[in-house]
Image (cartoon, rainbow, N blue to C red; front, side):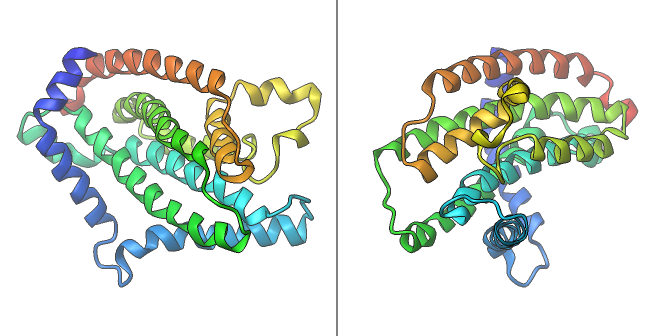
Length: 258
């Protein structure tokens, strides 16, 4: 893994260029441009808030803020995985022409989604003002959570991007998996609402730990579960090591299968 990281660092200018291009291409030709990074989560927040607050009658105080704390990082995670799946296949022409660490394509794709998340997090300012809640010292844990989320997303993204070269149906399968993962992660409902007999299924969901950490800081205003975050951080590093191994093993056949 250290060899991969050294190679990626050597091409750090390419990482910056590709990330910038990723963001530009995402909003190329649109009238509102990067404002969609704010409008997309805002529209979803309003929609989900209406459905679960007024239609399904979910009884959660300041529900819009609760929903925001989970939905924005979830959208980042989902987009990171789905966009990673096509990173290698979608850049086949570039891969065949020049040499560069292929991992850069996945990293820049994920970084583009994290930039979107940072912009989306700006929505917290008016929400905190509306609900008369302030920013406290616990927000200092956000960089740690974001780093763990990035490492976890990258480890999954590397494997998915490599496998998609050989199994093109994987993108459709991922859409179904993400839909199921959304409803088995406490995003639109509180974790306390989960029946005790099936709580174990939710506790082994890594993304639930990340979402819960955001909710603890933004919605509850408390320190997140440091032990769970630490364990997930260690697991993410181990997964990243394994992911680089798998990616390197499959990398040699990319050109002939794209």
